[in-house]
Image (cartoon, rainbow, N blue to C red; front, side, top):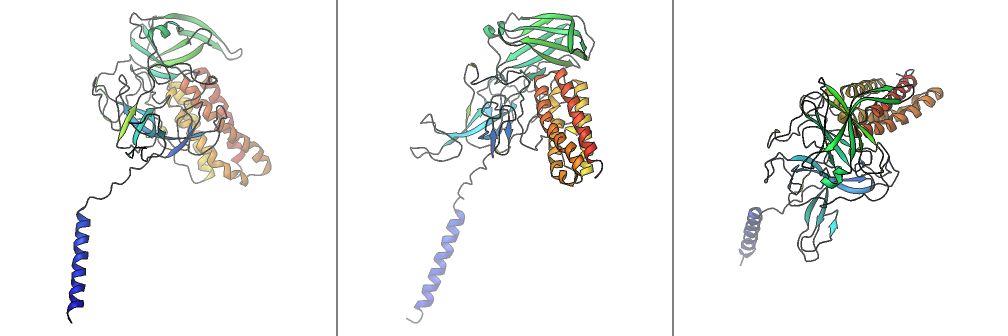
Amino acid sequence: MGRTPGLRALTLLLLLLLASAAAAQRPAAPVQARLPPISMTCPMHPDVVESRPGSCPLCKMALVPVRLDSAWMCPIHTTVMSDEEGTCRICRRQLMQVRVAVTWTCLAQPGIERMEPGSCPDGSAMIVRRTLRPHGNHNPQHGGQFFMAPDNWHHLEGTYPRDRVFRLYVYDDYARALSAADLKRVQARVVTRETFDPATRKTTEITSFPLRVSGNGAYLEARIDAVKLPAEMTAKVTIKPGAPEHRFDFTFRRITREPPPTAAAPGRTPAAAGAATAAPARPAPANSPATTAASAPPATAGTPPGQPAAAGAADTATTAGATAEPSPGADPLLAPLQIPGTMAGIVEQLKVRDAAIGELIRQGNFAAVWVPAFHAKDLAIALEPHLAHLPPDAREIGEPALQRVVRLAWLLDAFGDVGNRQQLEGGHAELSAAIADVVKAFAEVQ
């Protein structure tokens, strides 16, 4: 009897040790994958993405929440979508990185769509659904230069596939080729020589060629005169009857080539063959859910809801202050921005970005203009707290100048997306004037 308490204590200790060993052998509870962060987007301009609530810089509508992520999609078979780079299981083409919205749904009960994971009414776990975003795919499909139309709906890709031939592909807002019937409604021509009078703002065409639908109904094509590379060409396009005509300026440094299957190195999107420098892809959250129900856009595209965007509306898919890694060999000015720690350093970087924008426009690399433009925007925002250090007369110059830099950065992003050289040159001239005023305002306190 005297030893009973000791035996009981020993028995309890052994039971605790056995329980601990059993717990260690059990598999750990699955850790929920990190969710893509909630961003704010415009319901009318889904390409506008910000990191905090506010209003759309284009239409002033209130931003709404969305979870954004990157995915890999086949350029031909858009139902083939993966959370990893690779090749299409159908045609073996290299998958392209696109932007998707992430929601959770129930396969057995259609109509359920939530922004948070959870359980379905029948008790089963919800699965992730990835849906291609409008304007989420801006990858050239034929090795050319890709622009967005100012109607904020259509997209165009110009190619120079062989000597004396210009081709124009027209897509909807999901980068799907227009049907042959819709393509026949497009009226377009390509201009190879024109003059522009800056005093009267009048353009006079010297040499132009009509673009006609190809025999297979896949693109518009024109036979043009011989040109020397690098060659500048302007497509002037009326997408449908009654719509305004828009210009798209292309610069081809060499003959464009169709991307063959598996031509691109894993993890890289081929640069447009006519571009001077590969433009960085716009950033998206990198967290990819493991279990996925891939969702392609509807099979046909109709008229977008609401009013069409004003000319020059931007594909401004970027998180505030963020930039993406540039392609290997890209200009270091396209690398992520580091805000200097001094007012003098910030002002100097504004001047550097101003020069970078001018050089990209000169090269015809309009798709990359958004990077130094948004760098200038972030630098201007970083200078705003320092306005308090300025004397009143300098503050009267500096404050509106910083606001102009922010507004013009958005406009330059928009003009680059639609490929309009004249708009870009005009917007850049205004940005340069605004930056000059910033330099003048901060000169006394640097």
